[in-house]
Image 1 (cartoon, rainbow, N blue to C red):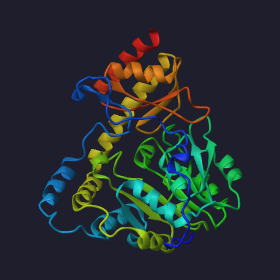
Image 2 (spheres, rainbow, N blue to C red):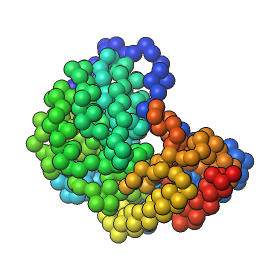
Image 3 (cartoon, rainbow, N blue to C red):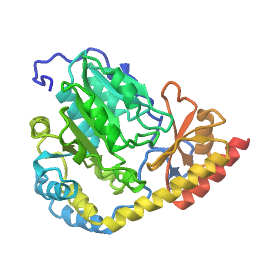
Image 4 (cartoon, rainbow, N blue to C red):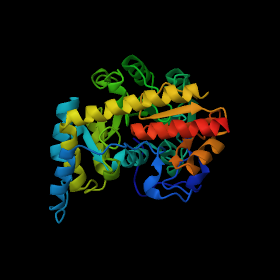
Length: 372
């Protein structure tokens, strides 16, 4: 791990000097003038389905205890996650969303002049992680199925590579990797490189038939951590809670040394624990998401779009009209989606799956836009 002492030299360049590696252009609120309550927000990969009623009840009860600080070691939650994943509780770090974990790994692994290898298009937090630490972002285009090009990424690794992000399923393209590919990739990295396996959409991938990689990674030499979240499959994006499953005590201890003490609220911890235990509700969210994802893929294909075969709660697709036009025309009809920004992917949009009613409205509006 790189030196993280206060005396280190921070980069002089502004953060915006490094653009996001193909992240969709998104916004929180519509500028269409339509009643905000009537806007269909299909642009931020949020779940349209609320969290488990058990999670809601647990959070409501936890609110009565917020006069006290939260458990700084998240003991109940890490015990439950350990039982679920097989990773020792002391190797599980909980964060204020997985975004906080991405910030932390940048502080741990990077110094000015280092390199960060990432798939592209992919999550914007990777580029920010590189930028604020003065590191160079090295993007490698995804494969045709939208999964990270592990061979291309290995070829991009140099003696200066200190951090690699491997997203599976990859956002915004939705492709995922097999365990054999993940392990082969990990074994191909030098031990001076930190590997982060970003599994924000882990549950969606597993529901689609994807594999569990943790046990197979147990004996790889490279330091690694897998990042997961309660924002997607558990419907808790607004609570901001994610976690890192660390491959060694050393990696977990490094996270512990730099994190803030009370970083995850009592309410978020209580909700996450209850949500984790309500497996039936999670399966319901995943299955409803699968149904709408497949409906959207089939529908936009009929309209002349060319979608990636996503397994996430989103679909990216090449459109027969410029994405700027498509996004603007849909927003004027009360539907917000996003467009990709990576070189070579500027003809693509990304759509978050919603309810059945959202899918109906999207396909009807998109038919109008593409026919105009």
